[in-house]
Length: 597
Image 1 (cartoon, helix red, strand yellow):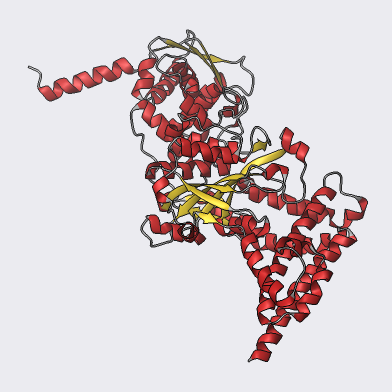
Image 2: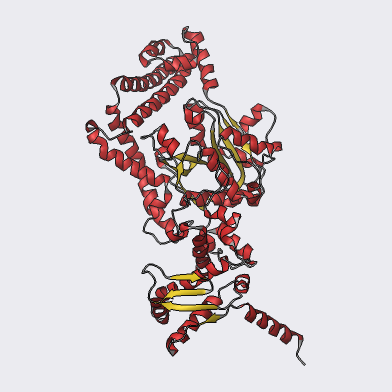
C-alpha cells in the first residue's frame, strides 16, 4: 500500500515529467557530443517555468549547424532549433570557461522562448501590456503603435529592439539566467512572474532607490537617489500658456511629492517642496540651438529630465512669468511607486525624438502614465495638448479632487498653485511709481525699457522705492539674459562662424557634457550592465558625473563670459546695463540703510 505522502510525491514527479519538453537529437552525434547535448537540454529545461514547459507539447528537434551566419547563434524553425556548432564546443568546456558556456545555454533558451511565444499559451510579443513596457508605445495621433522602439540605451542586447518577438526572446533568456534581472528591469520581471504564476526570487539584493542624474549647471545635485516608498503622491504639473508657439498650450510635467527624511508619508509631505522632483520631457537643445522646423520634423532628441521643483518654479514663474498648477492624481501607493519606477527606466533608457505635433511634452507625459499604470491605459486620455490632458484627467476621474483646498490662498500655501511673479512685480512697481512718479503703464513696460532709461530713477529712490526697484531690476536682468540666449541660439543654427572660432571648441565641449547630463546612460558607456544602474555602476557615476559637476558649473560661467563678446552690440549693452543697475541698487540700499541707522 502506497502512503499518501509517497503518492503525492509520485504524482508531482509525474506531472513535472509530463511538463518537460521532449527533444529529438539528430543522428550522427558521437557519444561525447550526444552526452553534452543532453546535459545542455537538461540545464535549459530545469530553468523553464512550468507554463512555458507545458506549452511546448510537440517534440523539438535540435540540430548543431556549421552553416548559420557568423553572428547568428541560433534559429527556431517550426519545431526545430538550429544552433551554432561552436556553442557545443564551448558548452563542453564549461568547467574551464563558464562565460563561454553561458552563451550556449542563453542561445537555447532564446530559441525555446521563440517557440513558446508562438504557442496559444504564449503570445507575449502580442500582449499590449508587454508592448507598453517594452517601448512599442501607443501613437498619439493615429491608432496602433509606433514602429520604432526608442528605449535604446542601457540595453542588454540591441537585438531586442529588432521586433517584439526578439524583445521577448532576449528578455526571457536574461529573466531566466540573470540573478539581478528583477533589479535592472523590475516591471518586466514582475510581468513575467505574473504570466508564469511564480516568483523567481531575485531583487532582494538590489541597490536601494532610483538614481536620477541632474544637470549641475542649474545648481542641482548631479546624482539624486530617490526611494520610491518616500514618494507620497504624483501631480500633473501644468505650466500656463506662454508667448511662444511651442508654449501656447502650456507645458506638461509630473511632480513627485517626495517626503523629507524622517517624515511619515502623508499630506504634510506637500510642504517639503525642497525635496520634490519634477519629471519633464523636453527637447534637448541646451540653450544653444533651436529651430521650429526641426521641432516639427523630429530633429531634436526628446528626453526625460529630472529637475528640482524649486528650479522649475523659478524658471516658469519668475523668468517666463507663467503660472504653475499642480493637479493631484488619484493613484494608489503601488501606482505611485510604479510611476516613479517607470520614470527611472525612461530616464536611463529612452532617447526619443521631439515632435511638436506628435511627440511633445503632453504626449510623452501621457505615455508615461499609460505605460506605468495599466488602469490608466484603459482610459481615453490621449491628446497632444498639455491643457487638454489636464481636462481629460479630470473628466475621467483620475484627479484627486478632495485633496485640493477650495481657498486659493491655501492652494498656494500647500503648493497646488505657483503664481507667476508678474502680480508681485506689479505690486513692486506700484510702490516705486507712487514714490517716484514713474510714467510706464505697468511693470512689464518698465522692465522692457532700456537700462539707461531706468537708471535715473535708481539714484532718486528712497529705501522703500529702491527695494521695490531691486526686485524689478532683477527681473529685467533675467529678461535680458533670456533674450541674449535666444540671440545666441539663432547664431548657432548653422555653422559656427569664423568669428566664433575662439569659442567653438568650448561650445562643443559644453554641449557634449550637457548632452551627457541629459542622457544619463552616456556616463556608463563601456560599463557592464543594463537597465537601472546597480551598485557598481553607481560607483562609476560617483566617479564621473559627480566629479565633473563642479567643472560643469565653472565651464558654464566661463563660457558665458566668452560668448558674451559674440552678442550684437545693442544686446550686449542692454545686458551689461541691467547687471550694472542691479549692482548699483545693491549699493544704494546699503547707503540708505547706513544713513537711516
